[in-house]
Image (cartoon, rainbow, N blue to C red):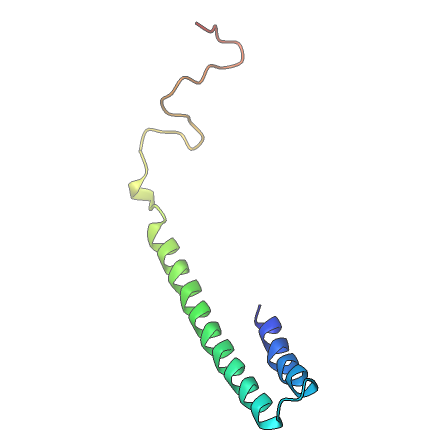
Length: 87
């Protein structure tokens, strides 16, 4: 995603100059796009770090699990086995 943003920071000024905009205007546009790209990158990194922290905090610990249940055991519901009679 950041690569496309960097590409657009180069492409947009070239297109603007091609359509007759002044070099100063194109350079200003490039600087503005670069600033927005930088801010978005920082915000994206912060969001990823926050999501990772939240995921680590939500992981169950060994003490929080039920002591009597086997790791793959089903609990509750009407789960009939393949050879069990059905009502």
